[in-house]
Image (tube, rainbow, N blue to C red; front, side, top):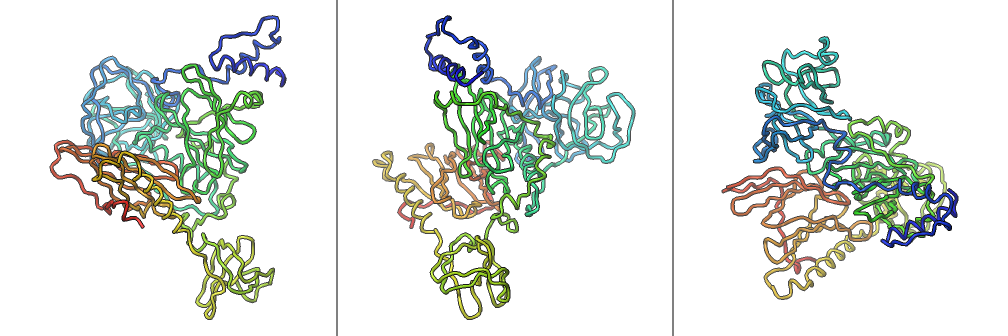
Length: 597
């Protein structure tokens, strides 16, 4: 299809897009119009049932059928056992399991087997003395869940096959399949084992997790992305089911960005983006966007194109990375007409439990891509390195931090310089210039340069404006006893405190809004309910807890904050509570607007 045909087709297609019914007379239609129509229509998805399971949910889970009514369970307050969810799956109903589990965790005498339902974040009882559900088929994609063989349980080379020796009692569950008499079998990283025998379950669940350490400058981007993908596997225990990943070019960086897709249902599909910023070293994303009824394509100009079809309304959106933040731009018909459809490449997502798709990233070294990141301090750079320095004297630039080193340049009194590293001993302090070379900052007798004042005044001024604007809203005008309250969260993981603003005119109306001063501007991180709630800092930077209590009902949530959003995880819920839970962390004492200075 040549350029003229593309433009003509886009003009025709755009008429249909805005709902007009006009058509081109047959005698004036280009010879290849039918082929052109077909070409662009294939770029859009067909309208999906938004309440149906997503493609990733179907590929990642095994399909079962309830042989009787099956009760559902949730984790208890401590997370080691389950309690009734007062829900059930009805007899004859089909359901999908991500992995099997036993409770209490670490209990080798467990007698029941549960299946985890990622769409509900609940567990269903599938075995209790006898099998209560039948396996229809295993998952298309292998999973990954840590289990342990019970004593004397054998491992086999295949279903109903020969006994083999195992390297470890602990196994990685990967999938389900059926054996003789429809017995469910577990596929592990070493072999096969039946789900149960005459004594009960053949395995028990153990506590699973990952240990996260600091990266070094020599770390490859494969290792960086490996960690993010691994951490996303644990999102299944939260409200998010992350099931796939892909690599895409979103900037001029030689290393592609990492896309993580989540959502058990079509209506919940979302993509989170990592890369194009040193924040990726600390597993922070640069943003996210919806994938509801969409197909995503790689464009040749280092952007993504989202072709979306929602209720018959077809739109094309360009997604790009600008200043390490995502930007979505809806394309006009003129812009759409200029797209090179022939060179669009559909983004295909890989099983989040299969990291082999990241092997190509071994060639990229994190320290080379992000030279300004302080790997030694996990991103917490010496505050002096974030400021400009003002020279008090004419100074010499040397090749190394030594007075006897080769002279390579000069600086004049009053010049402003930027430092990327500082080397100190008992008598001298040297700064590594961002432009190259070293300059002496001070010795025993003199301070040759001084760090310029920080931007502390800037963030305080910006926060004061946020509070003033909130306080001046009309809803507070006639209710004098209510006004926005604030708290400065110090251990937020950012360079400056996060401003927490509590707004509303009654307990039921209270909302907590979080703001941070970043890159010389205010960014709203997100908001959450503050109704009948107290907030507490934790020992983990960027994490706080909320305790909501009212009329004997209690809910405890952990809230994790990143540069772009905040994620909530319910830790416990209780009824008929007389003594509400009080976390160990610092309680957030909110203050009135007038108290902010």
